Image (cartoon, rainbow, N blue to C red; front, side):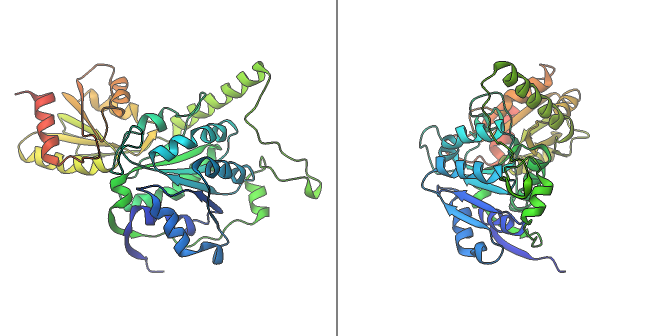
Length: 361
């Protein structure tokens, strides 16, 4: 079958991918700059073609709790929002992590704090990668840098979420959500039948039919000793994810004397920065984390043994830079360059930051 190549926004690519991957349910609420996810689903009417449920909930809190209910039955369910909306979902996300329920959360980040701006940002790194809600839990966090990855990572996120029984989050910034590029959409998949869901998810809430003992889905445990056992189990699972699911991309790192670490739209800017710097004789490489958690700490540490300095480029005041500094253990200087308020830097600004913060010649 010939590939289907179309031109669309990142948010639209997510919606089309969700339908084609056979997702069972979407529960969301409109907020800029991710509203096209819900709008595209409403336009496509997948309930008429695949049987997918699409609900505009009355609030972000309602949406995430609908996801909890759907995920508890073993269905492929998801929600999408932007920064202030994801803040409202944090309690539900913590519940999902505590109950070990697979689902997908999409966050197309905008500037803050507070209502902030509808312009792009990457300032939800702390909120996402460090947990956000209460308790010791982790989210599998994927950071797309293209419209194609917005589509592809829907499938990857669900694959990892079900493999580890853990919520996954697709953490995009407003640039990637709103930009238009060519994208190859996945082939249409058939949604799993109820029998196939039960076979894949024997832990799921399934009622008491057919003589089965009903499963109880909860994150509540009143016995402290049992709650500690549950937390120890979760930490062991997170260690397994860290050992097996780190993803990153390296560009021109073999001979690099300086390293840029950036994700999302900043990685695209950094790639042009690298080209401009090399044209001036400055050997710069780029390491792009694809999984923000698990974070590619070992890969960054390995490059730290080679380079003279590292610059993180982020649309925030300096968040990922903390994890980079932890990874390199003070072996080389690590500096941060970022713009705030929805301003996206140009590559020349980053070249200048590299020179003034690290090279200083």
